[in-house]
Image 1: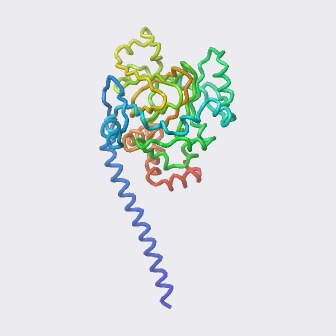
Image 2: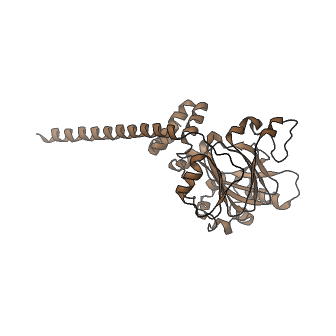
Image 3: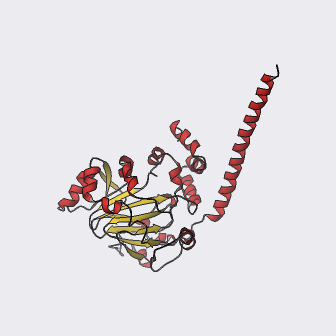
Amino acid sequence: MKLPIFSSDITKWIVVIIILIIVIRLFIYILKRTWHKTKCKLSWTPISVVERRSNLSYNEFVREYASVGKPVIITDVIKDWKAMTKWTLDFFQTECGSIECFVKEDSTKIEKIMTIADYINYITAGNSDRRLYLANSGVVSDYPQLLKDYDDPIYFPNWLQRLPKKLLKKYDFDYPDIFIGHKDTSIGLHQDHYYGSAWLGMIKGRKQIVLFTPDQEEFLYDGKIDIFKPDLKKFPLYAKTNPVEVILETGEILYIPSGWWHHVKNIEVSIAIGSYLLNEWNSEMVFQSITQKNPIKGHLFPLILEFPWLGKALFYLGII
C-alpha cells in the first residue's frame, strides 16, 4: 500500500531537481550576461600597418588583437589545408558547378543568381566589361564536403556553431563564405553586419584590402564611396580618413575586428574563404544590434545560444 506514495515522492523529487537545475542554469546565464556586458565593449587600436605574425598562440592573439580590436595577418595557419592544393577553378566547376549562388558587382548588393559553372565560364572567357564577384555561403551549405578541406583556426571560436545550420541560413548567419573573383572585382566598402568580427583566408591569388577604424564612420558615407577611386568632390569628408592598406597573400589569414570598415579588391583571380564571428569579444554588441532591429528576436538570440536545445525546439516549431 505504501509503494504508490513512495513512487509519488520520487516523481516530486525529480520535478524539484529539474526545476532547480533550470533555475541554476538561468542564474548562471544571467551572471554570464552581466559579466559579458561589462567586458564586451566596442574597442579598437589605431594602427599604421597591419602586423604579420607566425607561431602566434591563442593567448597572444586574445591579448594583443581580439581584446583590443586590432587587425592582424596570421601567416602560418592555413598552408597545410587540403583546400590550398584542391580548390581551383576547375575543382569548383567540376564538383560544385550546379550550385546556384548570388553574384555581386562592385558592391554588397546582389546583382543576379548564377551557377558556379556559369560564373567560372564567365571568368575564363574574359570578354565581359562587367565585374561580377561570387561571394556566398550557399556553396558550403550545398556542398558540405568542403568542410573537410579546411580547419577552423584556433583563434576564432564561433558561438554560431551551436545552432542548427537551417536556422543560421534563415537569418543570414550561414558561414563560412566562399569568395571567387577575377582581377579588380570587389565587395564595396562595408562593416560586417551586427558588429560581427571576421576572418578571411586566401586560398589562391591576392587581395588588396583597405581598413578603417570604427570612429571614422562619419567620413565614409555609409560605404557609398569607392575607396580605390575616391571622388572627393562628391565625398569631401573622406579626405579626413586614415586608411590602412594591406595586401593579403596566398596562404595568409586576416582578422578583422568588430566595427572595422573594409573594402576588399582582388588583385588577380582569387579564391578565398571567410567567416563571420560571434564570440565573447563582440557578443553583447551583436545582441544589441539585433535587438534594435527586432526586440523579440534580439532578446531570444542570446538565450538560444546559451541553450541550443531551446533554439532547435523553437525553430522546428516555427516560432523563430
